Amino acid sequence: MTRKFPETKERIAVFAGSFNPFTLGHLSILRRGLTIFDKVIIMIGRNINKPDEAEEASARAALLSRTLADFGDRVEVRTCDGLVAPEAVRLGATALLRGVRSVADFEYERNMADVNREIAGIETVILTAEPAYGAISSSVVRELESYGYDISGFIPPQNK
Ligand code: ADP
View 1 (cartoon, helix red, strand yellow):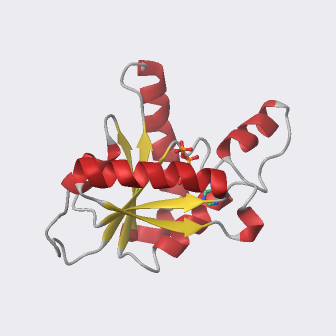
View 2 (spheres, protein in one colour):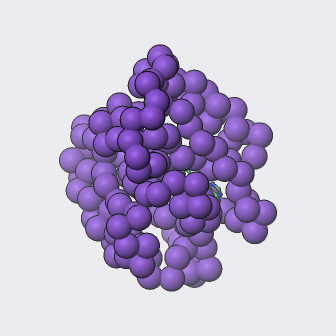
View 3 (cartoon, protein in one colour):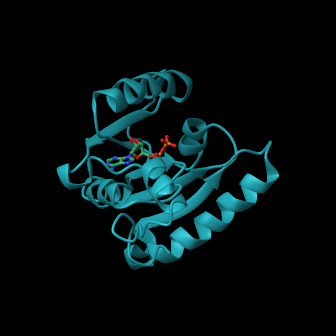
């Protein structure tokens, strides 16, 4: 599917993920995305079949909004119940924003980019991880936290 272009004057990207938690790696992608796009919408996926998880995602979105408040209206945090790509198009997004740390990430991201172009006609802008954050993943941070390790060095300062 190919979309007509340009559709909006403001260049908006949707940066979707579970962000559980939002890490310094995500922050790096967000900051660098803002050098390309006027606005970035962070979209936290939630599973409507698991009400508890949906509530948890909303709480996480509220917390993240406060953490990223300094970006003002250039960053918005939302949750998403369904497919991200059509929702991004509905919100007027120019592209999806994603990050890759490794070849393994790349294979997954390329596949997602192809699917999202096919179903919604939206392109994906993929930024490479900054070397300092290349080893940070939400799952590793979650695991460290579960063992009582202080994870403050991996997440943005206010994101407690
Ligand atoms: P998912 O639930 O799809 O794994 P995540 O919340 O883990 O989503 O991440 C969202 C996006 O951020 C993905 O494109 C992922 O590759 C990217 N990302 C995660 N951690 C980093 C990092 N340390 N550096 C760069 N990109 C990252």
